[in-house]
Image (cartoon, rainbow, N blue to C red; front, top):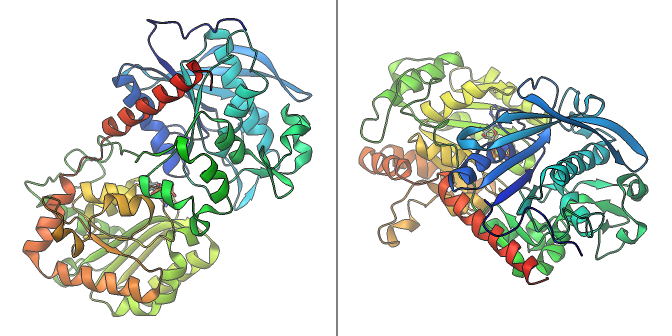
Length: 500
Ligand code: ADP
């Protein structure tokens, strides 16, 4: 086998990161925050970091640096590459193929995926790998979620004996195991995959093909976005049918908590807030509270300002606990609290919140839509932030909340369990002060109990301030997470050197 280029000793280590959305180019959820922040964080650790993602409609950044014809299956098109600098010397490569990516949304209309998504994301992966083949192999490929699941698969199949890419190790990160990239088996030849992939220990999943399964099986190392979620996805309750598939990779599985962008989410320098504030001086938070109430058309008098404000910014789907909220909806207006909600998602939940807001215009505000500036204002202005998730691989908002002195009320799952210390139980943990309210059971009673506990704590200003400050002092920076990824990259590289 020819010696792979680009991984020779002494060269700066490089990572090729492949994913379907990233800030500031395209965002539908937390993946975009992660892929926006990870490449610069790796660059700060001395890595040469390149992020490859589609050039969707409306993305105008970057300059064209390359174009070549790409064939996937019998499908051939010219694909362009637009290079855009990211912070700290990292770079993004936007794959230009208007026929595939110039659409209304990244993945589909409403809940219906575009039928050619397998091709759209196979082309993304192949474009990234072919570009690397022309410009030098990376030390490691880091693929994210089902959209990039074919990267490890192609490296072990199509490129196994490639003059440049042979032997390139890969890391695959699962951001949410509920999204499995399923398609019909007849896609296999159109994706340059042999029928041998339609096997239980390959990509086959109940007669269909799962791109997520491909990534999990073929990567040298597999990670997910919190330690707790890494454990949970090995169980039937959280594995969505993939618990056995994950268990087989247990020895190579790690949970690495996402960081947050501490510059974008910084109450001392957040231009979406009316006044800055910090752990040392929280006074500006009251201005944010008044501003968010005003944005929702809620009363801004002394009584409302004194009453705790509960915020939510979330996709309105079952995962995020909206069915649980629906079950307690009648109780919410009776609590001594005001609610502001921002989100979009399932129709029934959008309707529920619109109805609640219309019936209780002095207590409940609902905004259906995606609004970055309002999300910041809610994080800044709310007193507490509600995340009653059924499952939560990592979750970002509970970390943003803590940075903004907004006390999270969360269910003890996934990243929520790993990042919020409960007011009652953490007393026992020496030196680790409480940062929020955590509940266990996925029941209406447990949710109402947690809210009651939070409201009670709010009524004890000294305790409340201590929780706010403890949260604001937590280190959720990317630096720590990027260091852990580097360790995983090193393990993947070593495995390949050992010939695994
Ligand atoms: P997920 O990726 O499962 O949706 P995360 O908590 O990991 O959940 O990340 C969600 C991200 O999307 C956060 O940055 C959150 O603030 C943002 N977000 C979600 N819904 C909205 C919305 N309607 N408007 C603005 N930002 C939103």
